[in-house]
Image (cartoon, rainbow, N blue to C red; front, top):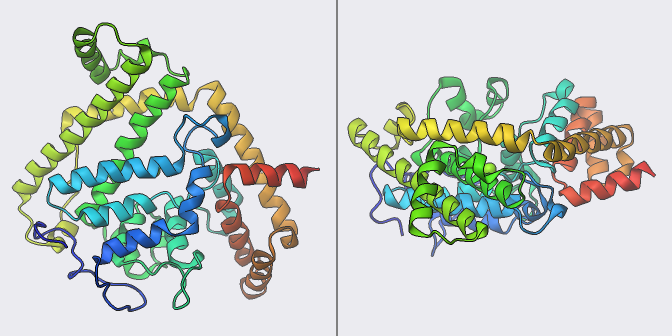
Length: 378
Ligand code: MG
């Protein structure tokens, strides 16, 4: 099942295990089991109605968090397989990496973080972990999905030191400044490759990004010249598909080639070495620059675009409105959330109830949040 892995790859046999002990799966690796639990979770199904950049109801052509997560997993698996690392673990982390995202993308997250400022804040990575550790209610024998340490470690990409201190072993690397497995490092970079390139793709197709301006970027420039020479009569749709395809491919190849050079130099013997080294999954200098150039371009031309800003401004209003309403009256939430919020408030004070309100809002899809907003406003 996990034959031909490099000695420094994560493996089922070397896993630090699950919080609640379980029998070994008979036909699957531990990480395949994690992946399957993630796919069967209700948070995973809700990703289809959560925004990446474009609000879900703006059109069926754009990425949602679900299609984004699938693209991340595809890119991550390619890199993992080429480097002899654990593809199943990478897939599990990639599919789970955005589970904790709020409705309305980053705008929603920032708004919720602001609402929670007095109550320990809101971090989407931490929320993804909270979901798989506690909030999913699927199994009779344990709360959450009871995933392996390695999958949970990969899900918790960032974490403030303050929050890390309350997380036990999973938080230690942030306090001790250590690295996660190479599989987690791959999932992280696959996320970046996926969203940079599909935001370009969605931006070009929606015409919010001007194709000529885009073709001034260094990588796009050289690839567009090659494409135009080979296929002078492409439609703009075909051209966009071809250039995005080539860009993803070149980023993935760069990661594979550059990381394998670094791994050979460092010569890790096992996964402990990986945790003690600096990050080994990295772009070459050339692609690191191309990556920064792409991000800056997207920031100016897409994320700050007036049409996108209009959506993000509305998102902020909706999230803050809902947070205030539910905080003022827990009864406006479904019964189980209401009872839990009352219980937590009596145990911990306002901070306890606010966290339940925050969980409830974070779990909403874009359209559900919009519906609730319209309903409560009237
Ligand atoms: Mg992502």
